[in-house]
Length: 557
Image (cartoon, rainbow, N blue to C red; front, side, top):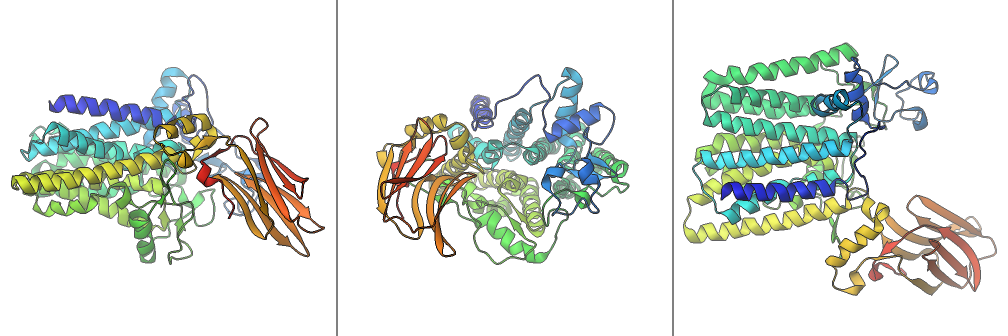
């Protein structure tokens, strides 16, 4: 029955991942060459060199300091590394070695980055599930089919991957590669603890090394895993260490061949914005980083999908070098995380689950110390904490009486369901709510399944015909950020400006002779135009295209 549950959950999670990575309109583009960064790196490796097959622009090379953030972005390959008049990637080579280069050599074409991320995340989930089930076998704990299914649901949906799948670029591929490699390494490590055969530990060491080739700071996890091995079977540590060092030396050689320094990944030569070309490691970054990555609350709405990433960064005291993107804290993605304290009482697998928890916390600490807080980075540490939490909790609960076991299991199940709902909602909207913009009909159709109350049901191209008296400031809203239509009146010297804004499009109309007394706003879905009349005279027409809004989101402030 255990295998049946595993197969069914694998199919369910895999189907969702495959849908989620394309849900916002990013289809798999097969049999062609793309302009994606990891495809460039795959082509480079297939061609026998380390630099990207792109020539930097003469305008960029002519700059006295091409790495200055103030240099025109149109001259740059943004977030690439410029060194010795060549482009490189500072993102780890691991995904290119595992997927992009082999695919290029086999087919002669690029592998779609979103499909690569799907493969990495699904593989990471399968290995995580295998590691959890192996941990339970080590502890001689048997859980029922229902409980196993809910735990596998947590591994598949409560770790931030649904959000990662929504918008795929070079960052997400590197993070997905790290997730896959760490999950595979943990699976092999569990098997290594169960078996006397050395190849399991060798495979674990190799995959921990590949994790470093994807995300260098994941070396922390490999180091803690080595400590765990030394505590249990130090005589066999050589099988683990040897492949880990081999991959580490390969990464160091890769860096040396590019930049003449084995520990230089290219950050110093990064073409990026302010504070992005170096790690601002500082203890002063830790406190605000912990808040954003652990505790920052999402925005709750009565309109589908109900839970949204907060569109604005909260005002938390932080250093000027601290960079924050809108982030939902991990405690909302996995509300059961406090149960990881059970690791202290899980005697049979304390070393293994403790390794997951300690390494996850140390990765979290490192990320916060860098001064960067962003939603996608949670995938670096959250799966580790969840695996350690679930494994140790199952061991502890197994020793309790029936009533306590039922009560605590119910609490865990409710927390997992809440966390899964939050992850799925955030995964649907993603960082930029692209499905609402790229695939509005799809978004509205899905929303209709879960929106029984008309006032809160999103509508595609809703009828809009409202009138209101003129006043300074915001005048009218329709829709939801970031794709909310906004009309406002602002003072400009002696006169006023009427400003119509939607997405990245803004139309401004000067009101030199004074503002009208009554405004009327109408929307024509056929033309995708918002018309603004003042005292019966047309003042402004703004072509915005399709609009999605629930009736409750059409309002006059």
